[in-house]
Amino acid sequence: SQTIHQWPATLVQPVGSPLSLECTVEGTSNPNLYWYRQAAGRGLQLLFYSVGIGQISSEVPQNLSASRPQDRQFILSSKKLLLSDSGFYLCAWSGQVNTEAFFGQGTRLTVV
Amino acid sequence: GESVGLHLPTLSVQEGDNSIINCAYSNSASDYFIWYKQESGKGPQFIIDIRSNMDKRQGQRVTVLLNKTVKHLSLQIAATQPGDSAVYFCAERNAGGTSYGKLTFGQGTILTVHP
View 1: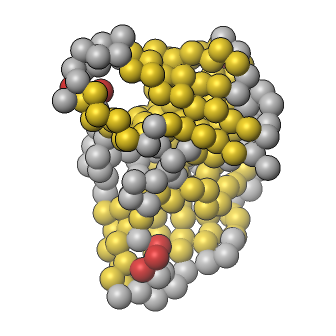
View 2: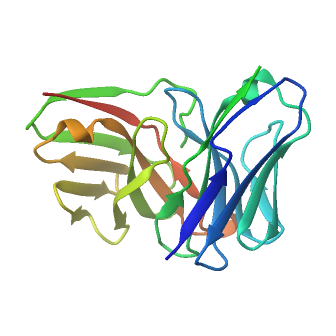
């Protein structure tokens, strides 16, 4: 069966520090991969999505970047965190055609 | 489209009532739609989906209705229970062009079920 792993679950980082959140998927190949951010009490904002290795689409101008070095690995990064980067970050995967997306458990990032 | 900067609308119901949660989607090229339930501190979980060649689909206690003419999606929950309290999101899958496969979430709704 397919599983998605996202870590860490919580993270507290100082302003100006770098960030690396990792997401891996098991049990499937060539998935679509997604990074979403959710502010408290708000909706899900699509940050990046990827349909293949090295193929990243950025949805909003921001302080973050994403990379897909392997088929089932999706990394969210920042060189210097801002206070406004705080939020709940969710990684998800889906099949290439009409299938649901499966979400990781999320990372609660607090920038202090 | 995404309304992620807005506070989520709320719906309060009594246990046992039926709930209807609505969603307006933005892309007429979307061909697949999903409803998700998100509990506090967790990732969204799949509830039910519907393809654009359908206008209604039923699951266990849930029904999704799709009106492509007005780009509207609804989720009906029968006999709502306290465990149904959560945030509900609709999502649409882009069917074509350079954004093929992209999954975009609509504005969520906070459902509160009172015993």
